[in-house]
Length: 126
Length: 392
Image (cartoon, rainbow over all chains, first blue to last red; front, side):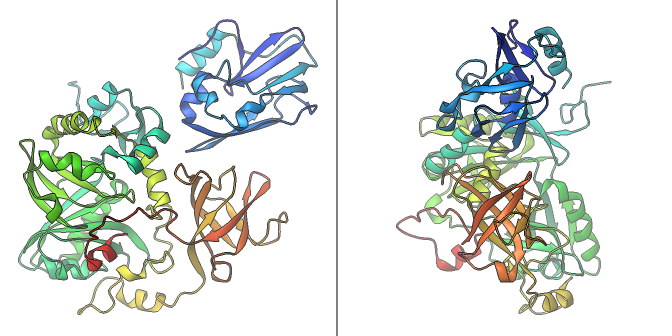
């Protein structure tokens, strides 16, 4: 299972890349693998203010629907609109072309997120 | 303690093909007490392969219950709702085991292997119940039950190229094997019961084989099939295929809570057969049940309705009492939009009715459509109408 060292994670299987006051968000390789083929991604609206843990969107596979929660608080400043046409990118490239949105951070510390080692341990126990 | 290859550390039963699945990189899941392949790679690829070429399935979790004896045909007529004694040698029929109140205990396929020998194929989760119920119901007949589920593997080859792949390997004339017919055959030196049955909506075959012969047979079929686009396919594809074909799944569309009539499967209940059978009294009452019907639902776009979601009369928010419940729902890979099956109140069951499904605080607009969602193009020389009717 691919868990890049330079990202932060949540126990709900989102990843976060914090750069310059912005957080790019997606779901992890573990999550996409557990979901199976993704056929639909409900993206957040731009400019929405989210508290940490708020509903951010939904990922639907043939077998199930999973909610995505905001891993950090802030304002949605960009969404990966290409996922509407190409939901399979979540499977093919979860940390790259399968990113979901970018959030302008209210709190840039990234506190409460897991590092790669902690997240790797978490998935190993699931 | 010696490692038992037939069961995992969690006590789940393992198919004789378990090691083979792991070698193919399958995602294994617990299913009805078994560990079975959910998918090998992409369930969408597997689904499309079955519609366009063929898929190779391990169904070794299914239960095989042999029924034999001088009065076995009469015993099965009493135990099941169908006219089993009317089956010709080598004929199969879709039928049900019902409770005395008419609720469905399991849906089954029964094969007549000899004058006094039938094979009853049960859902994995219900096999023990089917075996016990049959034994109990056979009590006053000269007939016995033997559960051969453990020593029997079941491999299915389903899809339009299935006959093309199998024909050169089988010591049997496949064109003579009609839909819902079976014949003992030799496939690549393996003695099998070869049946033209399945659960995908495609033409295809099911091969019952002794457990120890399953790995070489599966491997050979995969190898010979690869040139024709055959891929191994898991339970995820099996579920989306049967849903498109409008086939019920026990525990979803069928349960002890509903009779076959509510499910639109009243035709399997043969109230016209002679003699008593378990459930006859209740079923002859319940044939006139009009409260709810099983319907197909179609949605133009995601998200999909899912099992257990409430059906509402209107998409205008929460409009009071639910009018039904979704039993199965998923994106249809073939149709490209979500589909579902649901029990709805009869007044909402007409094709074309607009309804809504309550999903996580929002309403998904849906329309009642005819079942099945998908019907394959029939070959130029169709099977006899009498056989086609028996297919589900």
